[in-house]
Image (cartoon, rainbow, N blue to C red):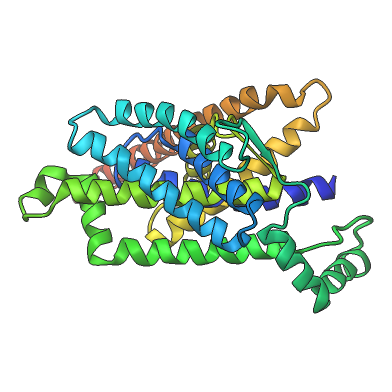
Length: 344
């Protein structure tokens, strides 16, 4: 059970990068971008293709980030220059990316024009490189010994390279997103999402800001896809289905639990929401009458609960506040009445 939870935390941290990308479009830019389901696979396909061809995994991961940025910019151009509805722009790009992803994966095999998946079982990855590094300096043995001997865990993971590298990488990306949203361009993107007409009155190029915001968002999504492909040891054309729902679930869960008072707190909430989502999903799969085929159902239920429960809690709080105000008014009236009787 602990090992399963450990794996869920690893995946949650990787998916948190994707959730940060979804946060940029849906919350900051107020753009319903469905490109995510396609750009996630684009990142996975690009990284897997380059790794199979012998490129360094770090270079392959960076190439995936660039590919995602281009895909996001194309969605932005469809909307801003093509004057296509935002939702439809994302859908069109998502559909187009399905064929593009098959072409990208086909590049890994000189005999294939298109390819639905790429196995990476025998290939090096960014995780295997860091796992060997942590093992050489003794971090694996120290952490495993601490869990078993000090905290009393019966079982503990033998390798920590994956969770350490994804945690460090995710925190770095979170910090970059925090910094970016506080720059002049970042503030302009936030203003565009809040009130496009107002920021345009200040001679800001809102079309360029939308394209840039979508590019950055899908770059993060593609980066997450590249890391998931290396983590899972395969890239598949259908692995991006439902990614937008997972991203939204992570954002909603994190915001509901941790709040959104500051940018730092909000992005931290998104990261935590992604981890919590994966843990909830792993726990749900431990139920006897649920199976891995119920993944989409579990995801839908988690999102529904994340949307409904905060509303019910807020209604309950508002009811309590109204009751307190009513009691305060009654006490004030009672005090005024008693004061008038004393004067009389």
